Length: 81
Image 1 (cartoon, rainbow, N blue to C red):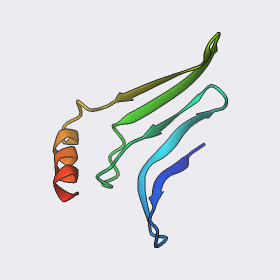
Image 2 (cartoon, rainbow, N blue to C red):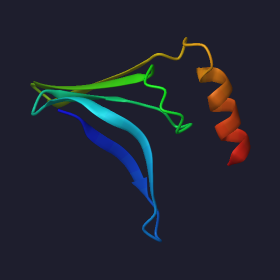
Image 3 (tube, rainbow, N blue to C red):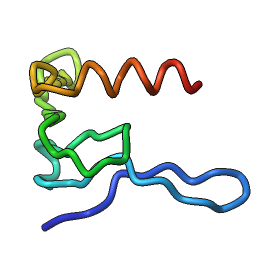
Image 4 (spheres, rainbow, N blue to C red):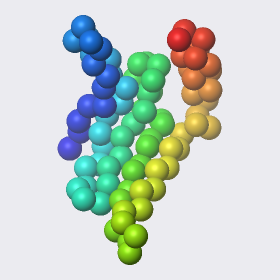
């Protein structure tokens, strides 16, 4: 199962930010994260949900920052904003 993670502007333009690689309701999901738009799939975001006595615990783990080029792309994105 693969879906899109994207942003839609007010004008209707869409920009892909990643792809859903795990869809496991109600337990969680995982997706690639590529804000550069270069198709780099090394960054992964895992989001897991667990019900406890006080409500729902959400755990988010963002991995892949150590991949070569990821830091450079992040700097370029912040400079372009």
